[in-house]
Length: 344
Ligand code: AMP
Ligand code: TRP
Image (cartoon, rainbow, N blue to C red):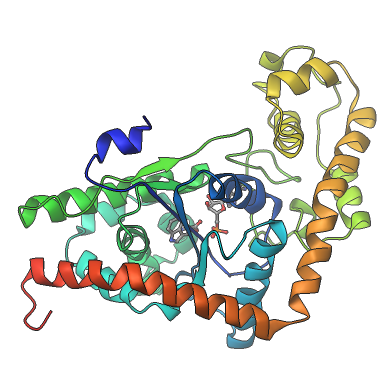
């Protein structure tokens, strides 16, 4: 039995996760999150995937760009293989219960907890006084996303672990304060070779859609030439690859490229190293570039095809939102009752 099931015997297993439409999708999003969402789609457990547009506006988004990126991210999910008849796929703002539950959680979460969130510190930077109140409250909205569906499992990349732990703290405090067992203790699912894909220009930084250098990341919309060029130019050290996986420990750039290779080829790092250990980068990089192009180019072509029919994308999101609401509305109503809201 999974850890989530053991900890939540009273809850039907359910998967929820989200990605922000705050820029293009990167290889980090794909390997760390989306590809693993798809693996869970066929597992027999209900899967709910969200385009979290309300999280995106915690930092400034141009309205036209936000609309386009929301549709593009949806096209990315579909192109990568998400089946909207098997999973629920929708954008967060179409289910107002997210914002409603988030307010309740704003009143459960403590300032001290929020002050420990490393993503806020990173995003707000030195000028935290100028950050939006929404950016600060962001993790409480994320807890609402998850707990509105009583989700037991949340597949995410390594950087979201702290937020899922905060979700458990919020659930535990709510349950304790109101003397109930209403919310589950959600488990983060952080698995695979690419839970933290690093920048191609700096092995100590996460690959991110907001990095000013486009060469630092592979975008899911990059064509074959761009992908091959970025990999060829990726920063490495002058040594050939080590012969043993342990030799990667102190070589972040080499480790990152091997991890990407392992995740794209769906092999373990040990299996990849048995193949490529000892090779020079001049030999390994073209292998990685070929693999990346073979795996990613068809997705970017499919994405472009979906983008030709935005009305169909909007229809899929609206249908997903109405199915999501059917689950969310009764859970919000019950929460209001527990809290003491008249009329709930
Ligand atoms: P975001 O783009 O911040 O909304 O992230 C969406 C999902 O992608 C989350 O589960 C992140 O943990 C995951 N993710 C983002 N960047 C990376 C990366 N460089 N490596 C692995 N996972 C990532
Ligand atoms: N905070 C997540 C990120 O930036 C996105 C997100 C919002 C999310 N709500 C979620 C992820 C709920 C998992 C579950 O990556």
